[in-house]
Length: 265
Image (tube, rainbow, N blue to C red; front, side, top):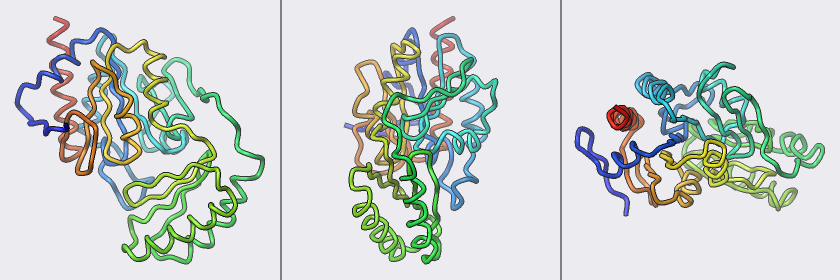
């Protein structure tokens, strides 16, 4: 059962995770490290989150990763990610990776059919453009429709048209819906795959995963004993802890960094 995390109070689960030999801190970006914003490409991590991310990444046997549905290109832009960064990235819901000291690594999987992505883009763009506040997002393995600037009726109508289009032309593509967004991908990976990849890559003995949306529950469901899931905001979740806002994520990361530093002294 998910319970609220109370800033400033000791938490046994967080303390136990902080003492794990090899820790991966995996964070969704939109709505978790960053508040949700109208322009998806304007999203940036809160300064207080960025401070704690850098602090954790500097600790021994500790890896921080952003895990997002964004394409790797866009994820690197919004995370302000440099080639010498110590932060790992998992993009496209676990179909793309960037690892410190190595760079881009694509997950094994079937390639998108030649021209299929562009065919979908060409058909979807005119539909989306007819709706005020709806925005088209090209993705490496598909596309997304954002409606953060649209009203509820507009969202319902544009999503229905795009659903019908994809059902007709690409019925086997994976559909995902979230906070004011609808996505389709030729790849079937979810954030559960990203958890497995990060655990294997860094030989993690414990993972903290934090996220705010439906797709983040894929990752929450595959966490193991000794891991810790954190839900940001409302909604049903299998996470152990819940915080209200990205600002509280910064506080939780600070508490984790404090505990991990103390455990290693």
